[in-house]
Image (cartoon, rainbow, N blue to C red; front, side, top):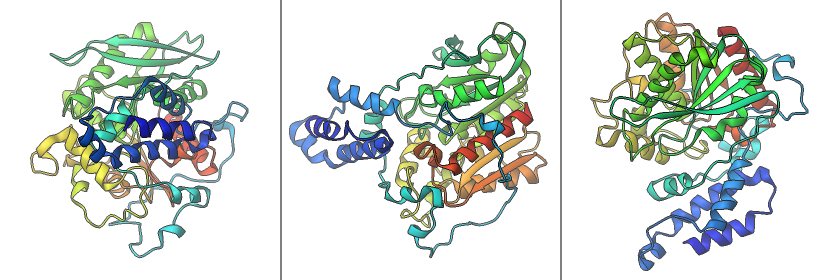
Length: 407
């Protein structure tokens, strides 16, 4: 297996960096294609030789991250836009079951139809976890530090990557950010560029939590780590110059699901009240794993099979059953009254589209101010895969405006 991966990386290392997502997909595909060879050789360890690991690390570090404009571009908040945030709550689905998937992609995202539908399982997720994300230099306008706060009772301490505008002297708003990764992989460093951009453009503190992952750490480990991080920010508000009345929580994909669950947990414990929820194509409902109507020809990046593995890694045998806690899957909550205002963004070709639209509708029906931003023809993580596309830039600008308005 390692020989195949070495050859694969060597073949692709010199390719342009905008092909890095396809490289990672090919690497994972190679891992999935080799179980027979692994059983024959007795090699069931997906650890990689140093040259392969280094190549993958460099390529992952070069992956574009959500909505980051090149340094030469003007401030995204100063760029005019005619796109309005949509407040729509259509049901049951905005996706036509009989549509040709080749014709449903957003014009800026047409190349997305060539992204292979790679699904993650035990071996491939371990392979992805073995890649260490390289931190991004924030430049002179933003500082970064790693802090450690007490963890949940009986659990290890929790670390956060904290980004702040250089020279911050007075208390400012903050965003607690939760990275994605299907509850099974990922790290705060993968969103460094986005978090740097938020800190620089909005003048806020952004703290990205490093939480425990499944299946080694099942529910409720992730949300409890996020709560410990939120509590730690409040306890250290003075030395971090954070206005505790203006702390937002947010995340993408699994991170968005954890952030939504954190809003519920914080509401119920009544110790800390977040000011806002920023939820990007969020993993909210484990019951989606039971759906058989999802068109796998149209969804990209995160497939139904990956979704089943991610949820089962976190919830175990309880997945899709009657006893799943809302602190693990926020859509399980029946009463959503009293939660912080929210912004929810998702594409029509995203596996999480329907559950996100439904959650936004339920928040609104419960009296919670919620802006729903549906991007036609966009797939899961589209802004990460094609960050230079205008639809991706606009998506980030609307996130930034929502945060600015809320904080």
